[in-house]
Amino acid sequence: MQTHVQLAQVAALVRLKCVCLYGGASKDDQRALIQRGCDIIVATPGRLKDFMSDGTVDLAGSRFVVLDEADRMLDKGFEDDIKHILDCCPPREQRQTLMFTATWPQSVQALAATFMVDPVKITIGSGGKETENGAVELQANARITQKVEVVDQKDKEFRLLQILKHHQQGNHKMDRILVFCLYK
Image 1 (tube, helix red, strand yellow):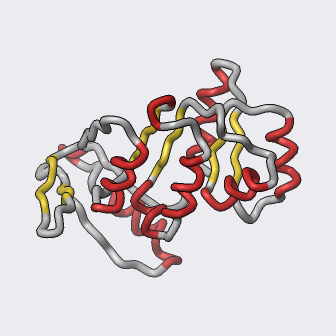
Image 2: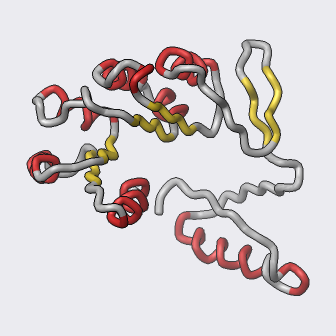
């Protein structure tokens, strides 16, 4: 998991141990890492619940909780898992909870209200507009150009390189380009 890779590099600088727990990998190997001691756990909800239920992980002493991509976890049906995990942590008044989300639908707002004390919302770009059902529809900065191209899987890397080369020619050499992708 990319989050674990990046976090482990930073954690090592201050001598903190970080483990990554996710389905599809050996539970025994992951359990061994936990039992050697860890300060930070990066985990998918399902695998974390597995280790909580067998007593390998106890979140009662957790002082910090981070929910990354909270909107996507809710979209994928992990709401009950998230609630169970947060209920096993110290009360919200005794921990700091951070949520990162690309969107701000009612479900994410409700989760924030339930599990956070006086949540502060920080928005990058415009604040968006409220829809009829009370959700906030986020909007990209007007100076950002978004373009979607549908290409065959085999042509994807070649097409991306074409686009990047095109935008780095002439007086555009210093333009900044940000590419989002689902997988590495």
